[in-house]
Amino acid sequence: MSFLKQIELLLSKINTPIANAGRLIGGALLAVMTAIVLVQVFCRYLFQSPLSWTDELSCYLMIYMTYLCMPLIYLEDKNIAMTFLTEKIQGTRISHLLLFFVHILALILFIVWIYFGWQFFLKGNVMANSLPIKMYYVYIAPPLFFSITCLSILQKIVSELNKFVNYQSE
Image (cartoon, rainbow, N blue to C red; front, side, top):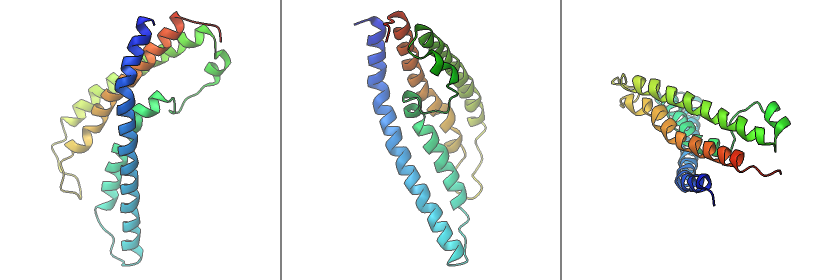
C-alpha cells in the first residue's frame, strides 16, 4: 500500500465519524427548526400572537445545520458543481490532476474564509436581537466548521494525488 493511500485512510478514519456526527446533529437541528417554524405558524394564525424569537432561532439553527453538514457534503461530492469539463475527461489521468488543483483552490478559499470568519467572530460581543445569547455563538460557526471541513479537503487532495501518481487506466 502506498504512502499516499495510508494518509488517505488515516484521514478517512478521522473524517468519517466527524461527517456522520455532523449529519446526525444537522438532521436533529433541521427537525428542531421545523418544529419551531410550525409552532410559530400555529401561534401566529391560530392564536393571533406571533412569537418574536422563532425566526431568529431558526436562522441560527440553519446556519449550524449547514456548517455541520459541510464535511459530509465535501467528502461525498454533493456540493454544487459545474461538471461539464470533468465529465468529458473522467477516467483519465488528467482528471485526477485537475481535481487535485480544484481541491487545492478550495482549501485556499476555505483558509481565507476561516481568517475573515475569525475576524468577524472577534467582533461578536453583542447580543442577538430577540434571544438572550451573545452573537459569538453564531459567529464561531464558519471558522470552526470550515476548519473541520479542511480535513475533508485534505483527504480529497491526497486521494486525487494518489490516483494521479498511481494511475491505472479504468
